[in-house]
Length: 77
Image 1 (tube, one colour):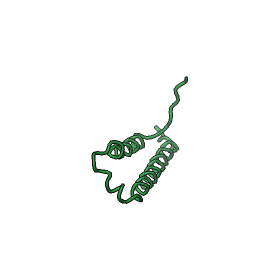
Image 2: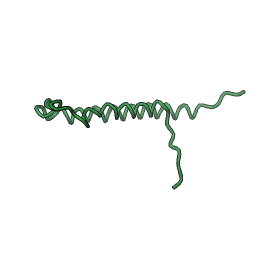
Image 3: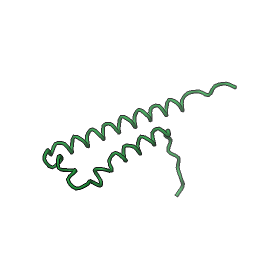
Image 4: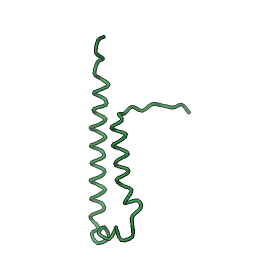
């Protein structure tokens, strides 16, 4: 299998890693920490929606910046 290079900035990678780290408390909850979600069922879907939309916006913004940086012509020597 040939390796392929997928373009992206360091900021984009950092943003994706940060969003994944933010999810760790939901993946490994402490006892009793999910009580508010159990008592208010709309909290979890709202939290997921906010995270998904925020991640989409971050990826779009950082991806757009990467495209603009790649399209910028090199300065003459």
